[in-house]
Amino acid sequence: MVGEKQSAAERWRRLVTDRVAEAERLSAGPGFSTAAAWDARAERYMAGANARDTDEDPLLRRLRRLTTASSTVIDAGAGTGRFALALAPSVARVTAVDHSAGMLGVLRRSADELGVANVETIEARWEDAVTPPADIVFSAFVLTLVADAPPFVAKLDALARERVLLYLGAYSGDAVLDPLWRHFHGAPRAPGPSHLDAVAVLDELGIHARVKVVEIANHRRFATVAQAVEYYRDALLLADTADVRDELERLLGAWLLGRRGAWRSPLRSVPAAILEWTPAAAQEGRTPTVSEPV
Ligand SMILES: C[S@@+](CC[C@H](N)C(=O)[O-])C[C@H]1O[C@@H](n2cnc3c(N)ncnc32)[C@H](O)[C@@H]1O
Image 1: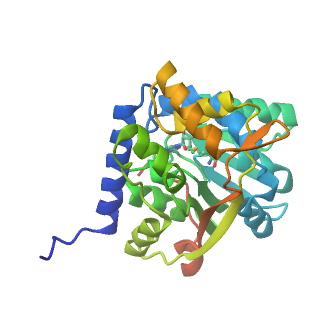
Image 2 (image 1 turned 90 degrees about the horizontal axis):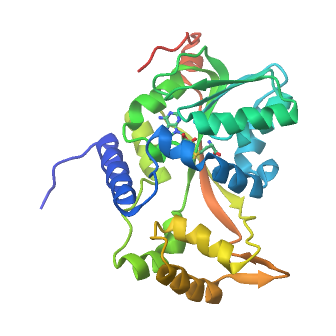
């Protein structure tokens, strides 16, 4: 039987919508799709981001190679600013756009603590943000939350003078958590879009990105199994009950590696993809102009 042809953008929308709907149905918490959801997890996200070694991160290393002291940069969906703040000292200006006031509040607090004065924050959906163009425009771990991918991607392209970079997981964290997810929920998790779905969406927009699969080191450590239980309970969208915590503790106790009081997942690194391309303006010798909401 031949099915009706579905565009990559429609397939993307379906994957994001179904996955977000499942997460919001199962989660007692705020979900993932709204600014309020990110406001609620800003401090925890910051703590998690601090546990990663951003300096070693392959996207940051690539951004450092592409920029100079005179470069301007836009970080679309900057969150608590791990990339924006790491890059700021070596470039002229970073514009950090995010729709969550909570995430940007943490970013500004960190900028003050670090004495970083050249990061401007814009609280808006990327699709609605009004900002001048920049030499480099990038977005890390945001697109898989966005159901309507084409306008988001087209705007990254429209505002870039030299290069655009998109960073996405290249291997679903679900693969690691799948046995635990099935154990508790009795069914597989709704799959999210992959970096290959993103490549297909880009192709439909006439954007032919270079795809580089990289490894992100996993430095997450838990001081106690109880801390790991809290982290995985949240990741698996499980209810906060004593039964769930006991069961999770039993399962994690057999799976986590523990040494010198630091428990960690056996996964030492996770693959991610950097999708990188030269924006249309640069290919056509045009200068991009100030954005309009899309
Ligand atoms: C997983 S976090 C990634 C943050 C940061 N890029 C990083 O890699 O640490 C996703 C962020 O995207 C933001 N976000 C989601 N959809 C957005 C949109 N349409 N416009 C702007 N920000 C968005 C959320 O508020 C959140 O801060």
